[in-house]
Length: 224
Image (tube, rainbow, N blue to C red; front, side, top):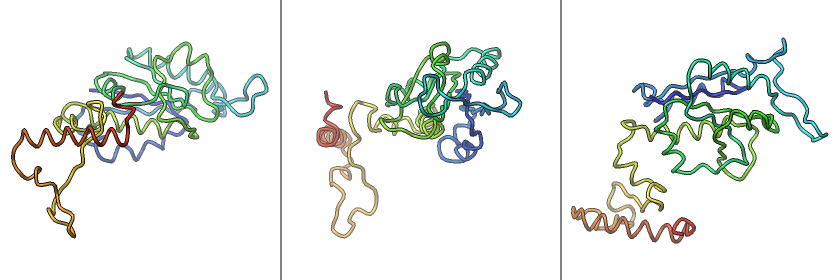
């Protein structure tokens, strides 16, 4: 089972993710568990304060070091983690290889930043992997966390048909070939006859060639 502990200042944000699609299925199958930790519960202040101003006169607020350190130390006192992940726009871009790698872990912590982010000393002392979901800024790490959880939940063995997963875009370094379903003829637009031929070898060749063409046209950088 993959166990994910999420550190956040918005614990209610994750209520909906557990009720849909592959995340729900993987939880029901006891292949995934999510534990949400409210950072305010680890504050050193009676009022639950978890942020403060930046040193150096830099504009904006930063999540304080003590609450995050207290939460991580508490979790580490219970068990050992394969990775402690911080979600940050200056982390490594999330890709399929990273999702594949995370899907076979046993225990990981995901830290959701907010405001300007977290104190650098947390990143230096605790974090083993930093991940970004793209070159843009979001208000916090909660949305990226749901993206990562969704991406890896479907890769856990037994949750989704493995044959289907291996044909997904990026799994073999290319984009997925065009896909079709019924009806065969929709307003004059027909499904390629090769897909109805029953010739598995010819169909696989067609899929491979179309995948190369699509990748070359849409994402030529992948072919490099």
